[in-house]
Image (tube, rainbow, N blue to C red; front, side, top):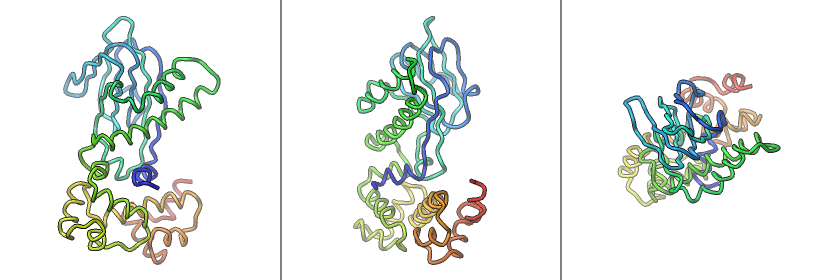
Length: 270
């Protein structure tokens, strides 16, 4: 599994359609579902307002995303309104989620690599056909994954783990961690693997990603543990798979990270 795929598996991004059609009047985020928001403007012109006033004049097909949710308002500027597709976004708390920018506004003309998926989504959203809801749901999830890849490949994220993937040495370190998640890594070993001094590696990792290397290792292990627990694997097996020698050490680490024991967390999810 490549590094971005591993990060995505921790974040479990999901997009759910809540509106598709012609937007004639003002639409405020207070009327939208809670959480992140995605808007795809297919036709028309609109103004995009945030808390402090006008931020963008939308004059062409455009992607608008607020990954973590943000107060905003869409105001169509023509009598014909704007054709839009809107979805709410859900991410699990994770390094990937924390690395996402607060807002992304990009003309679709800049997203050529996503154009086939976006065009298919528009066709499904504005044409009544069999299996429409299921297909739209699948296309939205695919689009969200493609957007995440686009952000990394085009270095749009300026901080956090997604920014680190643009740095060859940090990217290699993250890849090593996820490929051998059960290994008892030390900072010295990771630094040696990427050809850096211990001090330089630790400082760069912490500065870019926002947490020390071993803190990142611990979180990555425990996020994987959550997924394994949800698959029904017993705690004794999970703790070994993610690098803990026994269930006591694993439970203590899990509770320090999430404020709840693994067993209590699992019972809350089921």
